[in-house]
Structure formats: C-alpha cells, structure tokens
Image 1 (tube, rainbow, N blue to C red):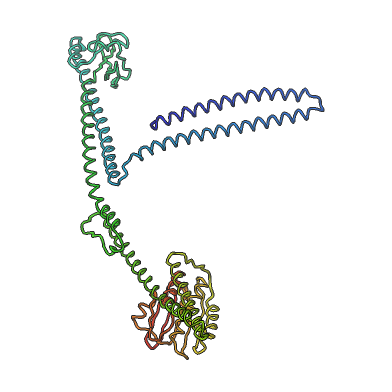
Image 2: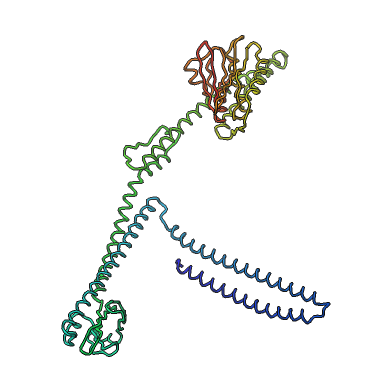
Length: 538
C-alpha cells in the first residue's frame, strides 16, 4: 500500500472505533439514567429506617458508573494509540522498502541522488511550462472570442455572419432574447442543448461537455428588440492538441535528461571518489612492513586532499607509536634478561654446590631474592606505564596543601640519606591527587639523592601564583649535559652510566606521566657540575 491508502485505512478504522465507542457510551448513559431513576424512586419510597441504605446504594452505583466510563475511555484511547502506531509502522515500512532497495555503494547512491535531482527539476520545469502554455492558449482563445463578438456587433448580429463565423472558427454562436428565448444558434449542433448560459457577463470560463473542453463567453448586446445576450462557445480541441504535444515533448526531454544525468552522475561520482578507492586499497595493503608508505596528494584536486592528509598523519602517529612500542619491548626484554640470568646462575649454583656449602647457599638465596625484588619493581613500573597509556590511570583531584606533604617526605629522606642536607622553601597548595603527588616527589627526591654527593644540598621550593603552583626540586649534584636533559624523560634512558647507579631508567618517565595526568607539566634545567632543577607546574 502507498501512503494515501495507509492513511485512508487508518481513518476508516478510527471512524469505526469512534462509532463503536460512542454507541456503547450512549447505551451505558441511557441504562444508567434508567437505573438512576429507579434508585432515586427507591430512596423516596423506602421507609425512614432504610433511606440511608438506599442512598448508599445510589452513591455506590454512581461511582461504579463513573468508574466504568473512565475504564471504557481508557480502552478507547489505548486502541486509538495502537491504530496510530500501526499506521506509523506501515508508513515506516514504506520508507524502509525505498531505502532497502537503494544502492549500497557510495557511487550508486550519489548517482541515484543526481538522477532524483534531475527528475525533480525536470518535473518542476514541466509543470511550470505546462501551466504557462495552458494559460497562454486559453488567453489567446479568450481574445479570439472577444474579437469575434466585436465583429458580430459591428455587423449588426446578422445570422449569415454568425453562421459563417461559427463554421470558420469551429465554435457555437447563440443569440438570446432576454435570458431564455433563442434568436438563433449556429455551430456545434451536438452540444447546443448542453451549453450553459454564462451569468458572468464578459468573463470567459471553461466547461466540459462529453469529455470535450469548451471556452464560453457571454456578452450583453443591444438589439431593436431590446437587451439581448450573445453566447459564444469555442472548442478547445486545437489548444488541447498543442498542449498535449508540449507535454509529450517535455516528458521526452525529461527521459533524455534522466538517462544523461545517470551517465554524467556515474562518471562524475566515480572520478570524484577515486581517491577513496585508492585510500581503501592502501588500508587493505597496510602492514607493519609498510607503515612508512604514504599516499601522494599531487593528483587529488578535491576536498579529499584533507582526508588523505589526515590518513598520512594517522600513519605517522601509528608508525611512531609502533616504533616506540618496539623499543619499549626491546628495552624491557633487555632489562629483564639481566635479573633472569642472575637468578638462573645462582639456581644452577644451588643445584650443584649449594646443598653442601651453607655460605654458597645463603649467597645464592640472597641474590635470588634481591633480583626477584628488582624484577617485581620493574614489572610494577611497566604495568603502571601500560595503565597510563590505556587511559585507566584516573587521578582523584582535590585541593591539597603541599607544605605538610613536603615536610613529611623530607623527614623520611633525612632518615634514609643522613649525609645529604634537605630543605624546604615557600608554601602553596594545588588541585592535584595527593597520592600521585607524593609518588612524584619520591621519584624526584630519590633521583636527586642518587646524583648528589655527601654533604650536598637538596631543596624543595614552593611558589604560589594566582592560577598555578610551581614546585621545584633542586640539587647541587653532578648535573647533566644538554643531550641528557633532552632525553631524560625517555623510558629506560639512563643519563649517567659512569656512576653505576641502580635503576631501570623508568622513574622520570613515570614522573612525567604523573605530572601530566594531573593536568600539569614537568620540566628540567641542568648544568654539568652545578646541579639540576626539576620544576612541576600544576
């Protein structure tokens, strides 16, 4: 069914439902009125002792009637809603039929759009031309009627003149004396008795007789007998034939335009979407070995250039992430290989001589425990970095007073490193995660303690600004070169291998993650032999 049939069916079912509801409502109303009259009579006729019971019965029946009325109205509204939903589903199915049969490919869909646009434009143009042509033809026919009427009046309304004009112009000419008596009538004999009298003087109108359209004009004329009416009826066969030719030509032009629009649209769409095909094939062929391949934009002169550039930019990021992942796996494997080799070596010693020599056994056990602890720490840091990259690291931001936190940490580091001098300057607070901030400061203080000689100074400085807090960790240790400061936050990078400090080169990379996850930044300034300053801005 089409839309009109679906809506007509809905209206028919709705009318039937309304009729059923109103009929039942009327029946209930009349039944209640009869019962109400009976109950009221029972109240009046009841003895005084039974009047209260009769009134209660009347009120109870009234409540039941209203309850039934509300219930039936609810059922009616529910059925009406179901009918409406059924109509909407049916209309939706019509739309789905159209969309399901639409082309699935982008080229086919766009070509169909081209054809539909041409069809719409062609129909609008055909309607405009057809209406305009019909108006012009009717206007010319009306002008000819006025001209013939004027010629007849000029010729004194002679019968011979009227007969000749009627035959020549394929029309009917009738002269009425008054509004009923016919003086004469010529032409279109088969329609003479069916031609109406036009009461709108000098206003032509169209009238259809036996499937033939006629244009009728009535004029008041003066004759020796008094006022008469000249009725002219012109057949529109020629005008309709001309209009039919025009319509057929328009339909032919629309058909040719649709065929042309299909081929033009198909070719244009394929040419415009060719870069998408190239992009799709490149995506299919992409692999780890081809991450360095990029699409050229020189031959693409459409808006798809931006798509290709975005694709190339995406490949740049993927390649960079892939290379960093490869390096990360390589570095992690290298770092894990050392403790595993130590554990394997001492386990081999235990299996050969450890059972007989207590000193060897204890040495092996201590080494295995130490290397296991190192591996556990390394794995924890690797997992921490993995959580941060997967977006699972979510800080709990709150207002934190940094002064007590820094004092507490410095007390702990004074106990761990009594040969270093720790100090705290300034005060401040920030919106941050207290646990993350503590871990961040532990990493920086531990790093400063490693590379500061005994008797050296390590200082935490707090600076409070209007919208940010700057926290600095300064030391007067060995410092770093420019090359080292550029790479200090890279994973597994150890800036100073000459001091043989323990570590895996993950601490400062984790410090950067901690700072940035709280919405802050971390920066470093250092000079060899003078010391290093790490600045955290929150």
